[in-house]
Picture 1 (spheres, rainbow, N blue to C red):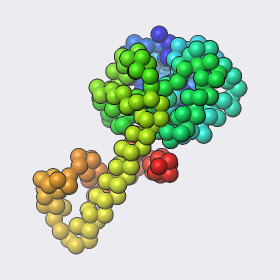
Picture 2 (picture 1 turned 90 degrees about the horizontal axis):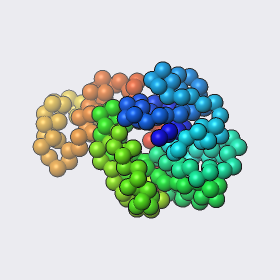
Picture 3 (picture 1 turned 180 degrees about the vertical axis):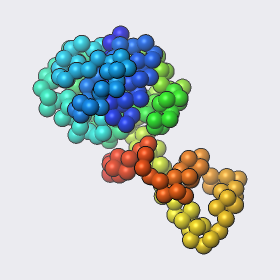
Amino acid sequence: MKLGLIGTGLMGAPLAKKILDAGYELNVYNRTKTKVLEIEKYGGKVYSEINQLIKESDAIILILSNYDAIYETLFDSGVNEFDSKIIIQMSTIAPNESIELHNKILKLRGEYFEAPVLGSIPQIVNGELIVLVGSEIEQFEKWKKLFASFSNNILHVGEVGKAAAMKLALNQLIISETVAFSMSLGFVRENELDVNQFMDILRNSALYASTFDKKLDNMLNRDFSNPNFPLKHLLKDLDLM
């Protein structure tokens, strides 16, 4: 089976490698050409035209930054028919945006479902992404094998739009928990309390979330140079709710 992947950025590049490792043929496209060079060396076939990639792929995965990027990449580039190809939309977008894409792609003789993921680069590498699928049940069953190449937790949430909504509900917790923890940690340090004692108390309480330990060293060292989830994307997701 030949898959197409549109978007080889922060999440798309490691996802492409997992798909190739699973034995799929992979056609790739990215608006920024330098971002596909590593995937080409890894075995992916690079395309400069969206139409050609769609024509030569059995299914097309989208993992772009937002709805506008998806719309511009697909429709402003001149795609006018999908010829029964299936579009698997894995970006984080609003439920109504996903439904709009679904309806437009159906009119252009394609199929569509959504499969946003919870997790970031370490979870992709370890095959531990949580995949939230909004689709017909037949589509879910058909494509579970693909998702298993990078996930050990594949969930059918409902029809198109439901997985998009679930993803935003979960992403809101990333924002809330990170802000709350940073405020408490800052208060602990401002009052010259023992950070280790604070963390021990927190870990043994109902207040604890594992993300706190994942963020701790970066916050203590003020090192935010290599984020798994850029702030601009986090704020975008917040605006979608």
